[in-house]
Image (cartoon, rainbow over the protein chains, first blue to last red):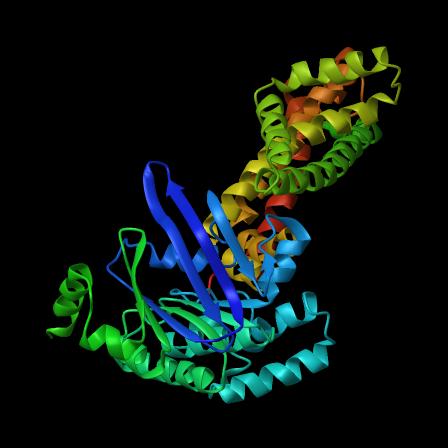
Length: 247
Length: 214
């Protein structure tokens, strides 16, 4: 695929003490690409996702965003993080702020937009995820699915170049998973660059350009969803798929 | 009984002295405690070390010893200030160590993900602490901070031993004048109760307004 690389990881290694959680990771995500990362728990997929905006540090290797190496600390890092949205498993909406304030806060404080402009944009985004009516409520008053959609709107408000999803539906009731996946499908359709760590194989099949399969801290397969799901090359992937697709 | 009415101005001066010490030292303790708590959770290693040393030294030094160190030590380095200012410094720095630890405990009650979400949106360390983490930590630290300030009010009695006008010290004047020592102490205790109960009431009000978990 001849794509403009947006996120590039080269020879990335990370340890938690003795545990080698990321081993020589090489991964390139092109502009507008949707890459789904799957694998058994403990395989390092969440860690991989979190290294991309440096919520996790790495011991060796390089990570580049749009051609720029990731800064280590300070203002430069904050600036870069503003360009990469992140959606968490546990939503992490600011508990002491209303839905509207959640979406507006970083626009005002980081992007330095006027409060009214930020609120206007927030309401547009909330409308886009179907939650404009919930704007004055606090996060605790919303369902999990609604909270996660607000979190997506909050990330979009920064107009990021890419979005990272760290198991966005793993903490949701089954009936709420679809409303979140639907928003994500729409984003993928609109050309957003996305890295999605998930256990939702249906989403991987229908929305991903590539599937990255990880086990024991390594990337084992990196292929189109069609190829991966119908004809996995490695025994490790076959074993994983046979376990999750059986029921 | 007439120990109070006969010496109202002596009691009044002492009472006001204690109030002044308490208020100024509280402000200092809150500001320094806030600063040190920020240091202790900062991403910069040297700030964390500074905060830790600050807390360890001040929290583990007997307050009387600290008073001696400040009132007798600092003038040797050419810093000569009124004793009252020295007393505020000693009390404020000492209490700031406890405030810092209460704040830090509060910061730790805020889920990690809140700070991570703030940082992932591009907020600086100061913004994520000031806009997201501390406002939520604030709710849970109201009671322990109240306790620390009540302790400060009572600890201010030590300043009396260094000839700073404060409430407890009034007993010396009065016993020299031959008044009944028991009644003197009863009225002194009432004076302290007025101050500490006022602090309690203030923090109860704060807790009613801010401390309610939704």
